[in-house]
Image (cartoon, rainbow, N blue to C red):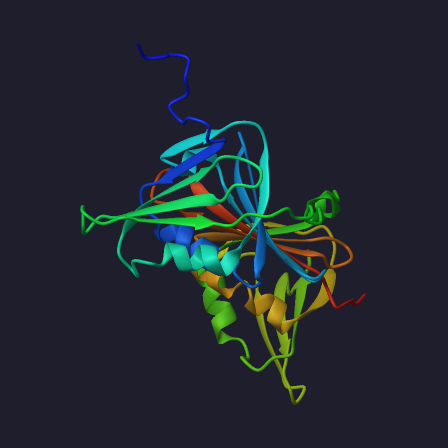
Length: 274
C-alpha cells in the first residue's frame, strides 16, 4: 500500500529544477570571484552570496518562479566552493542541459544532476561538499536612506559604456546628481590620465532617474570590473548610492521562463568627495 502522506521528495530539504541552465550558469560565473560562497534557500527563493573582504559582495537571487520545480522545507543555509559549482555546471560545455539540485540537510552534500538535451542516454551527478559558514554582511540595511540616489538604465547600453572606459584604470569615480552631469563615470589610469562618460537623465538608456543630492565616490577598478560578466548579461541595471558612496549595482537577467534572475553587487567606496 502506498503511503499518501509521504513526500514525493523523500527526505530532501531542498529540491530545485531548472529546465535550461544557460542564464543560471552565466549568473554563477559572474559571482565566482572568491573561492567560497554561501547558499541560502527558503520559501522566498534561493540566494548565493560571495564576498571579498569588506570591499565587495555579490548575491545571486532566484525566486521560486525561476525554477521549473521548487521545494524547500524550512530555511536551509550552507557554504560551498564556487569554482567546484561552476565546473559542475560546465561539464557538458555549451550544450543545453536541465539541472536538478537536491540537499538533504546539515552536513550532507549538495547534489547536482545535469541532463544534456542532445543525448538522452547521458547524465552526470556531482556531490558538492557543504560546510558551515558565517552570515554575510547586511549592506542592504545601509541603503534604506530616503535620500538614496536611484537610477535604472538599460543593461546593454551600460555594458557598452563600461567597455569604452579606460582598461588600465586604477580607480573609477561615480557621480550621481539631480543637476548635470546627472550620471558620470570617470576613470583614473596609471599615468593619472582621466577619461569620463556622462549620461543625461533624458538619455534613451535611462529607464528611471531619481537623484535627491549630488554624491561623488571612488572605487577600486577591480571592484567595478568584477561586475562586468553580470552586466553583459543584464537586461537592465539599477544603480543605487547613499550619501557616503556605498554603491549597489542590481542586475536583472532574463531567465528562460517568465521570472527574472537577479545579481546584486554592493561595493564599498575608497573615499567620498564633497
